[in-house]
Image 1 (tube, rainbow, N blue to C red):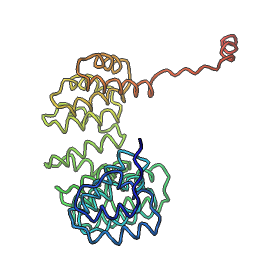
Image 2: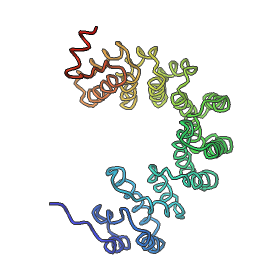
Image 3: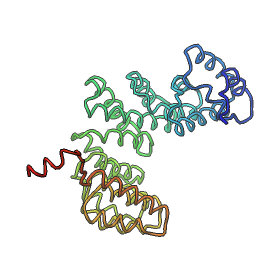
Length: 320
């Protein structure tokens, strides 16, 4: 039996309390009218910091589990909350909001939010707009605005900053000499997280000039670097990486193993497919399941798709 949806009044009462709030109750905040949003916004400042952070995180988690839920107006006003935990949840919760004015909002947050984590989230969110710009789905003015905001964060943030790394990854969609220089400078850094982001960016760039770096990092002593190198090898479709990726199937770190399996599916070729077929027969259900998914991706990207045209098949065979 399906539980009845709570009313907005019940949701507001639950927000003001101290007990955990049932998912059923918070669903009352889905797709609110402007008037209802004003009611929630009016009640919001009276909640304690931890309570607001709890609600924001729960709404974000709910929207990830059920993509039909839309808390966009709620997340929008949360962007100006005094608590960085709330702002972070709000930025992440708006990952599907492609309204042009989000560029203005995110650019301001990237430039001036006091929290490095929130700035990093804003840089990541701007990345989807950067991709749209590269695909000519944004006006030149908007594309230049996104590029300028991200480049400003990259140049103006400390080397250890999360925002700097996120800006680099978002800029990696762009192929030009300026971005290439920053990727190479980041890879030359002594700060490991920045170097890892550089390798991630090499994969995202779809530029095979980075292949020697990626191939070399597949044998890094650092697990996170091996993982990112495996991902990059897959995105760059480096068939030269297949022998090293096969070795990573036995890596002691699960994330590295999964990244290697997926990369084999992206790269294509007989050697990759044979490796995936063997992996799919292993006794490890997690890695075998990952191999099955990678095989499906491999066949979708590289398989010989044959479509039947029913009664016309015989006609074309005779014509041949």
